[in-house]
Amino acid sequence: MRTDHQVFTLKNGVRILFQPAKSSISHCCLIVNAGSRDENVGEPGLAHFIEHLLFKGTQKRNTNQILNRLEVVGGDLNAYTTKEYTCLQASFLKPHLERAMDLLQDIAFFSTFPEEEMEKEKEVILDEIASYEDQPEEAINDDFEAMLFAGHPLGENILGTPDAVKSFRQKHILQFIKKNYNTHEMVFAISGSYPPAKVLKLAEQYFGFIPENTQKKQRVAPLAIQHQITKVKKPINQAHCMLGSRAYHMHHESKTGLLLLNNLLGGNGMSSRLNLEIREKHGIAYTIESNYSPLSDTGLFAIYFGTDTEKTDKTLKLIEKELKKLREKKLGLIQLAQAKQKFIGQIALGEENRMGVLISMAKSLLDYQKIDSLKEVFFRINKIKAEDLLQISNEIFDARQMSTLLFEPEA
Image (tube, rainbow, N blue to C red; front, side):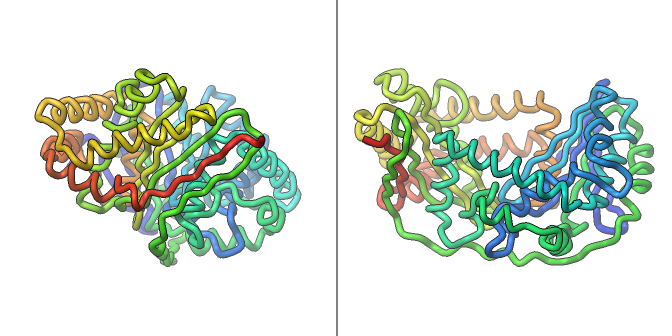
């Protein structure tokens, strides 16, 4: 396990993760195991709406006081919502740790959700929804997830729908928080140059008195779906396409192998197979990439590209050609070694992003109850065999089970 950190568990179940760092810049985040998939039927967008409202007033601060509390000392405050998490985060200079902890505790546990602020924020979110709909590369991702997880909360847009957002009331917010903000499923993480005793003392001071909440969420895994091909006309200038399928959940033994395959096929960098074949060799798509997102009980693998309408069929054929190679032929020893080396190097470079690493560690503590060292991560990657990748390719990249969503320009 990773040894560059300490974990303290408060009496109410909140875990405090501390990673020492020799830096004048500190980071902290509060990760809550609650996201859009935990919303009730008819309430899409509620988790994201709550994230916005957390900044709109607490029992002792108004909106301006919340927004200025860290910015006045040069710090930064932000938040985001995913299908399974809500995250509050802050970056600041070393002397302001107590200020940051006080603020994040205040907005997370003592927000008042005033009705007048709710109405104003609804308009902001409606504009955000409209903005995403004007960006086909964003909208197609949401619509593709809706297609692959049809009839399940994972298929709902994190932002919600205009009708749902307009319907939200304070009671909906309070019910969601009571049901999903389990103190045993929260991690407050800190990275900075502090004595551990000071971190623990401040954690006890600001989080130790929070009432324990042991509500257990009932997440239901999505049912299997049939492969499908959908084409939609849009007022756009070029075609946008996504193809993919359900994939391994985060606890699956083949997760690391698929992460490696995804990186080889269309992950970060210009040397991915899809980028070299489709953009560099044939010059028919400016953006082409793949992504694998493991969730607690399922996962999603998808390939995205944008191109001229007349080049769509050729691009799809070239993608299938690359997928077929991975299904039919094992990687050679040199190819496998290079793929591993590239992936390991990217992970190592990612350690430079301290906030990203801190959030990743906090999520790992929530999901796996432990935090692996880089050595353990690299060991898992290095022990992957070519035969493993061949099997994974045949399970995930089977054309017969991959669905396609295509946005086409209107005539």
